[in-house]
Length: 260
Image (cartoon, rainbow, N blue to C red; front, top):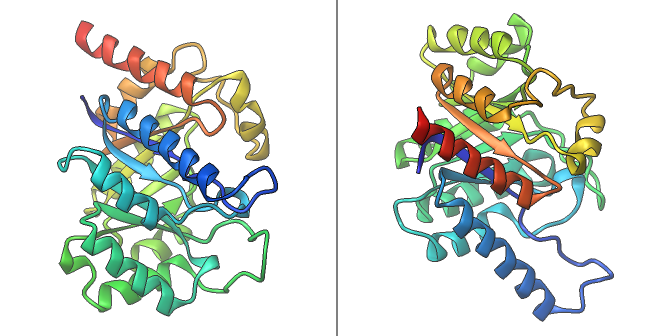
């Protein structure tokens, strides 16, 4: 187990032309659960995405229920929740489901434009304030907001006003700006989880969509993550297009930790 490390996984897609029915959907879920079991040997927490790029997937909360019964009970599970996909009433219901599943927390995101239907117009910070007012946090569920790697002070103040338990970054490009953001938040009593995109040929497209530059750490991502773990509350590793390369990096991080 690598302290302070979490890993992001995508629930399986649903209702695609290539899916042959419920059997295929169950097979895809079993594949994801198998990957989660492999990741759980290294990561303290597994974080589930929610319909990345607006593509319908099994809901993160539903998938988390399957994970809870598939992994050790001590494993932490966190879910992303796109506020643009759900009414406020629906989000409150799902937060209740998350509490009953004993999840570690939820990350509230605006999300990409959904592929089907119209987005719900509401701000993640406003939703978080409502959940906190309803006492969701007192039930043991941590509430997170997303942040850019270099937010303006105005944007940061707006997010912190809703009193999140912490902020989770988009993929970070360098150590200096991330450490600076962490120190700023830590001085105010908030935690920071830094996201690292695994540098690989299969993840180039994801990096291009975000106009992301991983040149700072691409030669030695393991060292970069070790440095981030020393300066942040937690590091979230993501490899959206190559599970094998993500798993390989986890092996390298653990081996390097044993050497250190």
